[in-house]
Image (tube, rainbow, N blue to C red; front, top):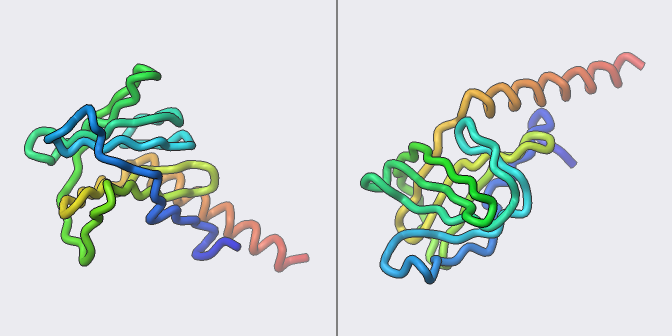
Length: 140
């Protein structure tokens, strides 16, 4: 069942994150992501990713060494009522079959990524298509 204009939020999607042991002493996270996803202007393939805060934690380096892909994105610290203490968490928004990384959390550090132009466009297109489907079914 899909709610809110057929927008499906894959919020709080926990992807068996763990602090990467190879990066002891850093805030790096390692995650197995089972789907392609978008970060900023980049679409990244499914796979194992290492997410590392850089530049005073305002920039995240997201890399899949096996696939040879990486990207950097601005992220903004935010306050959350509950810290994430079990290794870490990545949140994604899902619109139809597209996933967009929205939040990276580890311990008390929670970083939010701004919505990209592509995410706003896909969200609008999915809502528009859903509203056309509803109107079409009402006409019959």
